[in-house]
Each structure stands twice: as C-alpha cells, then as structure tokens.
Length: 248
Image 1 (cartoon, helix red, strand yellow):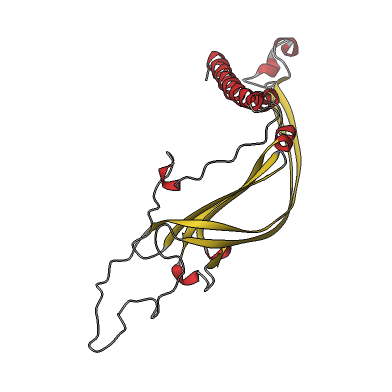
Image 2 (cartoon, one colour; image 1 turned 120 degrees about the horizontal axis):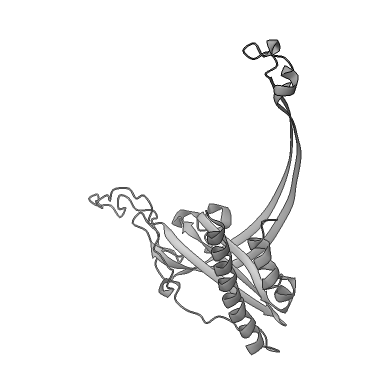
C-alpha cells in the first residue's frame, strides 16, 4: 500500500469522523438544557435493521388424536395457561448477571544471533602480496539480540440485577419464542437503557410468566446510558480520531 493511499484513507476517516461528530455536537446543542428525550414505543419488527431469526427446525409432526381421549399427541400441556405463547404476548425476564473473571498471562522471549563471514583465504587470497589491504578480513559481521517481556492481567467484576418486560416478536416452527424487550429510565439529566433479546422455550417460562436470563438462548443484553454524565465521560471526537488514525 502506497503512502499516498494511506494518507487518503486517513483523510477520509477523519472527514467521516468530523461529519458524525458534528451531527452529535449539533444534536447536543439543539437539546441544550433539556433532559434526554425518551424513545417512542414502537413495533420492534418495523425497525430497518430487524431480521427474523432463522434456526434449525425439526420436521413437522402431524397431530393425532386417540379415540375417547382428551389428550392430543405432541401436546406440551394438558390445561391452558396465561403464559406467553404467541406473538404480542408479554413476559418478564429476570436479569441477574454476576460475572467475575481474573486472568494473568506472562510471556518472555530472548533470542541472540551472530553471523561472521570471512574471505581471508578465499581462492588462495593468502598468497597475494598485501592481501589484507586488498581483501577485507571479514565480509559480513552481524550481531542480534532480541528480548521481550509481556505481562497481562485482567480482573473484571460485573453485576446487573433487574427485571425487564419483553414482547414475543416471533414464534419459530418448533414453538420456541423470539423475545425482545427494551427499558428506558430517565433520572434527572441521565437516561439508562436496557435491552434484552433472545430465543426462549415455552417450557422454561415459570407459572408467574417470568423467565431467567440463563435459560434464554442467543441472549443479547445491552445496558448503557446517555445524557450529561455520559457526555462528560466520553472522550472528545478529536481525541477519538487521533487514537484510531495515529500509529503510535
């Protein structure tokens, strides 16, 4: 890659960053002194980036009835209940994340190399008068020494305990439910957002219409915020651009 191409890409990235940051800056100035606005309640499936979930499904089994029996083969329950089971139903997701991770890694590398090539007696060079002044004693002499010490330590502890209501957005062919829930809490000038999504089995839903997060497959949990405190804690766009563009 040529130097000109690298400079053009850096300039393009800087321009894009300036444009997006300018939009964010103008948006902050437009809502100066106001509290962060809440998002309107809407259908998640109407979002431009929404994609239905597709997972491996078993072959459909025809429903059969036994004579003089109230039980239908393949039925999951004998009595009907009020737990979520179709599109539009609501259930509560119990989020209890208490994650602790501790890693420590150490790497040491040491390498020494020596190269010495001489031509003092190359093809009878020692018989030539004043050969030392004609031919060098050493053609190539190199010494190399490489050392590297690397230490890495990770000590992380995350904890999130809350409940969020989710809506069934899709029922898969095998009966599993695709759920998605979003919760926004505004306190003074700071707003917190919680997003939960995934695939749940109807059997894992408790009798009180709740389900625990570990029982949700392909679970996605996002917790963040926006507002005055978040803006203060976020690095300025110029610093973010230099951190990405500068190679040192």
